[in-house]
Image (cartoon, rainbow, N blue to C red; front, side, top):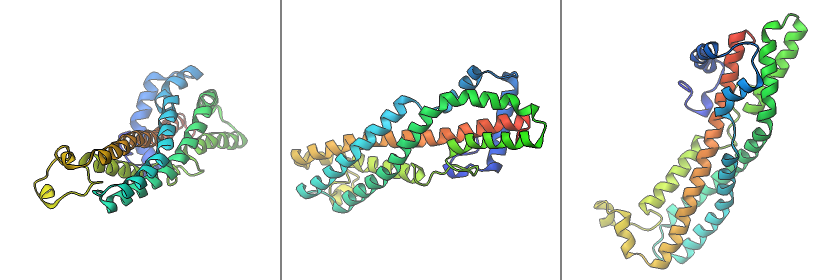
Length: 254
């Protein structure tokens, strides 16, 4: 999308702006009546994939293991930076809560999306034939149900606060920065002043502590991948809603 860059940015006004170039593209490539196959092709880029769910589930499974390893590392290491370990643990706990909600949401969308394409094609095709007030009320109810499914609420904005959003993306980035820079270990003053790379700092650390750290780092990488996937799904649902909004706007249904 061109104008919507945060999950909170979706609203009727931003969708209106976003829809202008989309409507031009729809006009060029769409002939009425549309087929279910056409809608499948046009909405394919927004759909949840099985690999998305697997990535998130893998991350969710690793989070409690990583949290326990953090606690074990904190007790066993003589070189650990306890404040950073606590921050890392808290970040994992926050991500865990939001990621679980995202997994369930993605599973629901995965089951719903393909059957929904036939219904969406039918709604698009009937848009210009609405004559009576009753027809329009029924149509609005049907199209609102589609928007409610992908946006998780009756309003034209994504209900995202309990799912992965920008805050969890930042937590995951901070965790990866911590493992890449080695700040889960205490950094000596001269190492900090000289900006000594962690690859050099590792040489003074005990192998048993490094092994524990490396296990945490590997899990953190997989967790970040799952978090990124969850966020991408949420942005795709916004894209789905804007695409459908653009069809309705083009045909006068909105």
